Image 1: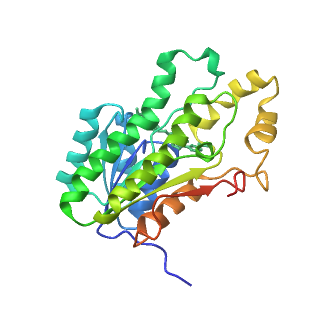
Image 2: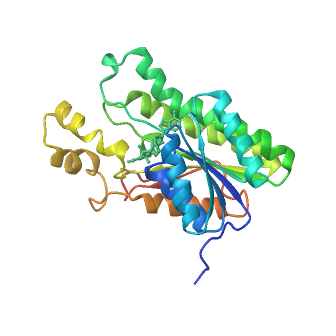
Length: 264
Ligand code: NAD
């Protein structure tokens, strides 16, 4: 049997890490030996998650970071370097969802969703590369995409558009980063029971004219092979595998973790 993946001596920064999938990633990375920066627009939440990791013997700090704010993103990466001496793994994970048909979206709402997912990923990528390239020790960039990086669902146009775009960003950065030893991959989860998903179920029920239970069965999990939600642990273990993978043999890829909702 292979030993579990380890990240001893590595430094990881994860955005949107005060909750859900991002939180599971920082906790998993820290348990594997990494020093972690818990970055989130929810500063108190980020501090609390970091304190929990530190209380368990891990190395973690929380930073306030709105991923759409260039200065906050740069400052968060500077804090990471100052605290831990470098950056090896950066995960662009922060996200939100707004559920309504395209013709009802206000331009500001569209820009907010696309801004957090795509502009946020760009700012995070650029900040990481500007520190990884000169350090000369390679690196790993991960993006939390979605099955919605591969296919669409009604009522989620800006989210689906931005998640598709992340695949293009990751493939481009895989090509540019290859010579520097920087690899990129997109993790594409199916539905995971986090606040982002739980908050949209009532609205989906209203829009589809069905009960919340039916939303889960006939909308969210309809195309899975077993009717089971993906978990934060499933996604975090995938992130750990990709973060610990030693070469660019795996770069520019999408790894779909969705109970077979989407198959390639
Ligand atoms: P979540 O709501 O539990 O966590 C999202 C986190 O992002 C929160 O802590 C929130 O404060 C933070 N955030 C929001 N806006 C931000 C900003 N501007 N700057 C920094 N942080 C910000 O949701 P989650 O399900 O864990 O989502 C994490 C990622 O996973 C998202 O990119 C989401 O699209 C993706 N995803 C989720 C699912 C799912 O089913 N839950 C499936 C596929 C992909």
